[in-house]
Image 1 (cartoon, one colour):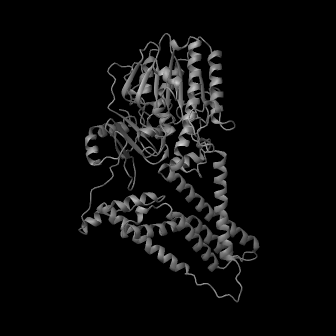
Image 2 (cartoon, helix red, strand yellow; image 1 turned 45 degrees about the horizontal axis):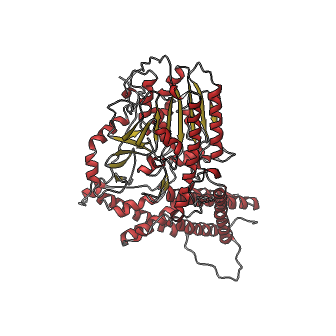
Image 3 (cartoon, rainbow, N blue to C red; image 1 turned 120 degrees about the vertical axis):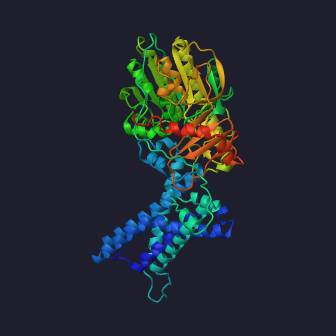
Length: 629
């Protein structure tokens, strides 16, 4: 390329790219988007106008650089720089749209703060557990999309023989005018739909990344249009401080403090606690407290681990990490001179538990094995190290050890001797797997991985028993959250819904001197600190530092559990599970499910039935984030 292309050829490149992006964006829509003429017209207008919007990060710098180079009569180097910029930026748009579509198809949400945090936090990408074939496929897709843009640029800017008739292409100003008309029409149609609660368009808007809702209810009312009531109830909170705990703790350290062994498995859902799947944990649960309807404080690792250590709703993550506040439970353990050995087969930096749960821990007490061997191998190595720590500890001081198993995280890894479910998918490629058609062999991988995790749990329990430590050690076994295999929401994994499959985990609690029993009612991760703190000599009632209840109290009863993600809070009761957005803008579809995780026929009636609980939840959302006094 020896000279700068003409402006017409740059326009042609962006027009071609715009058509590719329109095709890409149209893949976000479904057949329902064309079920009625009005919805079909809105979908067409939105697809085209948002394709232009998504291209703006390439259009603006591209034209600015072109104008700058044109004024300076750029040579070959300038033309090459322009080509690289345009292909790179437009290729990045295509890659991001593909990534967003993949995320939305799997989990039901677009690229958001959670995804950005995952990408830029140390250990975030590794936590996905993608197989080598998935990584290779992703790399090939990125290369293919960049190659597509390079080919488009070459075709649009190539020299054309003089004898060939010029192609008639729309001028850039006419394309811009058409996009503007479609944008205004789409905005007006959405605003009208919001005013009259026309749900086909409102819910279709959820499928577009970064959709910007616009409503004009007041204007519609003035024009005499019958407006509908808001269809989505949300909760708006404004934390104004931090009051954690509400009052200072009163602690009388026990003369013989109990040791603590805390075992957490990634994505370990409730129905894995069966004799044929997890025989060691099943047998141990018969000697301990077995929590049959136990719920995580979230549908992802961040909120799940946070809630079991702090005993607070997941939304408190944000003010507590901002304030740099460790959980009171860990503070008390440090004050009582516990020895620590904290292990994970992933990372302490994603989610950033090194800045929350384990904020005050010594680096030498934190052992993360990530990368290298497969997760099941790292799990086994961590258990080897924990058993060595137990044997080498100072017997004159209590100890606390924590383990996070990664083997049950997708893509679910296990050794050959842990295979109990066949057939299983040999190569689980996230990008090429037929999830609908291969869900059973994918789930069989998960069952095999859980069986291996159970073996490692069994090793710990057997070692404690062999060393005579069970009678002086609290043992806690939980999942951070659940895992769904398209049983209810037609989605695989977690972090998308609040049904039982994604939020409920096994719960086994061994406390020396407690009689074995089954708690068949609802329990929560939030109850763990409220149960352990009194055993450490904390005299305050749990309400001073937690939103949980003491599981060891004879009158223990919980009417409902609460789970959270980045933008929602969910009520989980015996009859209903209802999720509400927090500080949300625009239309966000609510989950209103029955006890079998099926959509209810009358959502408004369900919400009316739980209104007292919702008032309580709203108060609790800011209970520990208000100024003292």
